[in-house]
Image (tube, rainbow, N blue to C red; front, side):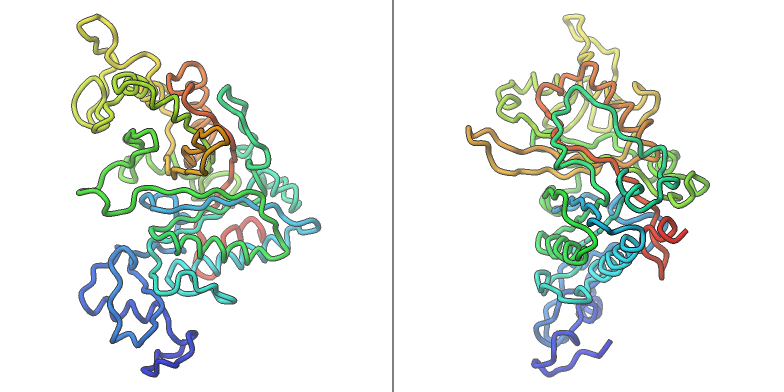
Length: 416
């Protein structure tokens, strides 16, 4: 790649985001643990202000696992599904995943797309951008790879809270995009869509958000649109059984899913008008935790173990028997657990003023039958929260392990 010129008329192709980061790093800028990249330079790097740490934070594309699974929640997200075009098969799918992987690697380092970049992310660093790819149940019949379709990808059962819109569910291919800058995230979304070309057509797309990093005085568990702290008991990478719960083992079957995971995606509408009519006490009893700090109603702090047997002066359980936090505990579900990594969403209002808002629920597990399905069946039998939410879209996707350098995501499936 050509060195950056001091001539301000130098073509943009010679002005790289990575080059600017080198200048920023020399000034003592603190970067993300994986290194960083910088934004497009409109003027020579030595005359440009360095990026903030938020913009410079970078996630690696290549690795044992795909990005966007164990990384911290991002401020902006896009979930998008594609169906292969009529006549497209295994060869076209392989070419598409190769293009997508190349684009993802470039954008995640802070470089522009290789062709026809839109300039949307000009001046910005990678901002913790992650792009993750998965395959739906239908992908395998479309590509003649039915014998490689994992049993874990069998369709999810029906649940009582389901009001699913099939046009916004499932899909041959799924892409998750996240970043801490809205323009960086949209830039990636547009690049992925353009790369699809004639090989795949858009099936559905959803937009989400989380609190921006640095918006609170100290790092804390995210809140959802009900105002509740959400994610307290999430498995953590330091847990002894984290990999066992979240990732398919290297010796797993089929072999192409080694170090991969299964993503369950649900668009969960929150019936906020009904929820907000409840008193604070009633809301806390539905969840089983204090709204202020996420501590269990049995006492302590957010991370205090919940005492399921504690009773109040009236003799009743302090944490109600149908409280959401009680029902979802792993020890109440045979140890079932999943890594939740959601985005909130707001898609405006219905004609009567009812908000169309809620949660783009994304959870990761080594086996969806032992993870999401086990827990959701338990919730189906009496979760107090169920009357305040509605599942309106659903998808299950096999997300293979990360690509090694020189590989593209899914190569072991498509060329194996």
